[in-house]
Figure (tube, rainbow, N blue to C red):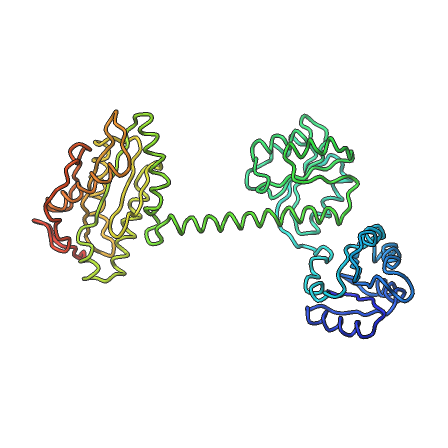
Length: 453
């Protein structure tokens, strides 16, 4: 930025010049108000800092004269003072000062100078749906919006704009509230806010030549984010639209980061399936609905047979490939309402809402056969399945079904693996007292995992 500093002290000018350079800007120095005003006309400045006391005029008078010049009417003007006086501040603002800053802490001002800068062309991107029935006003506004990098779709009626509205296609809506046609601009705002109540995801700006406080309050109640009075001030429009788009982008970034954190907490990074943390979120909902409406709800637990032997014989990368293959199978072959997750290690769990024990057993048998045909990493793999279901007329929880399904998996492994065992809740009440089978050893008549020839 090109920063003009106006002060009568040669020492301060030299000190501040070095500070401006250190902050990464170009310093331009003036020793008097008259010299500073001449610099405003001669140089394409982006910020002016002037002492409130100058040798030929006050800083307040300097502001008045600067604002009267074409090059200074929208130029940020900062008055430097050592006094924090309310009357001085009010008089300075009335004269056109942008802000007052402590003269003893000016280093921070130069480092934060960019926030006072004039709007930057093409600083934004996005699509604006613009409703205006005046061709003249529409040309002016379109030029302003395109000047900051936005793509504008202009509609002369609110009904046409509403017909063309496609969710996700627009970053901002700008509408005159008194456009002619079947739907007014206020009607458009009302309809859009009904469909998209989140004001951050779809900013709406209303425009009107009627600067009525009651009308503005009504518009804000309807859900507009901001209001612009006609005739428009170009810098004001740039600033208001830019702020809304910046907030929208920030909101989207926060939402994306939240989704990333959620995925890290809830999604197994290897298989892409949800992990056991999801059970706390979805199981309570599924079981509450099933118990309340007396609906069927089943659970399948599967454990890959001899998985430790796969890791020991073929390496952990091959073991990971097996897990990825199983995860892909579970993710792509179930219903949308089913919940498949990696419970831990080589164990996977499926929750099947509105499926009884027969349906769940059938689903498990299909998976057992598909798993044998899957051959991830060229290996023939099998799994032991435990299936159970919520009994009608009885209130149960996740732990009740999981305990029974786990016992059914234990039974499947004891009976030779690569099979499905279904157990009712009552049948699974008593735990098996025998020692669990060694998962490294082949079951009766069962081969270990072998490469496919």
